Image 1 (spheres, helix red, strand yellow):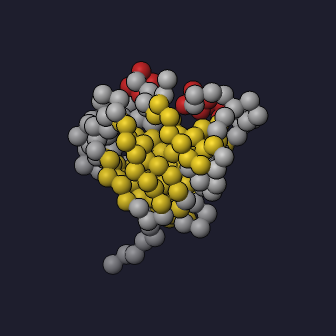
Image 2 (cartoon, one colour):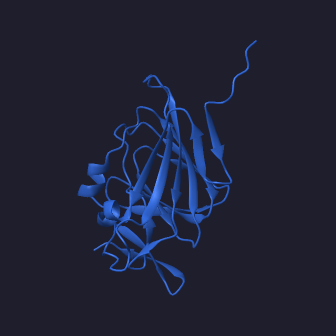
Length: 184
């Protein structure tokens, strides 16, 4: 019997995934400005906001799964907490699982009518995301937020729908306290 090494290794200490077919994408402030209510005048465009590691399988069979890791930096934009772009799934029958590996934050969820609710994320918390809900991560802490995720390969990401109907709330850190405000 042949024994092989794993295709992917999640480095919990460094907060990254190594291995073959790992796609790494970096989101800078310049690319993320539209996610926030106001621009952060003192934030350089090249500020790293978050990194996404995605482990793809080689075939597109609809029952296959993707594995990923999102690492969010502890950055605020004009007091608004760092957020991911957020998306609906193209196939709303495809649910997703998030596991908070490190840090603290919120999983912001929005239904098709624009109603939002959030779940607290902390190290070890496990979150089931219904495929019909838009979702985005919010880093509310002063350290990195690292979240592992698993989703069906055929789920798809519908970013345009969130652009057309943005999340109805925003999360701010003001004087060290987290506040949630309606998105006007």
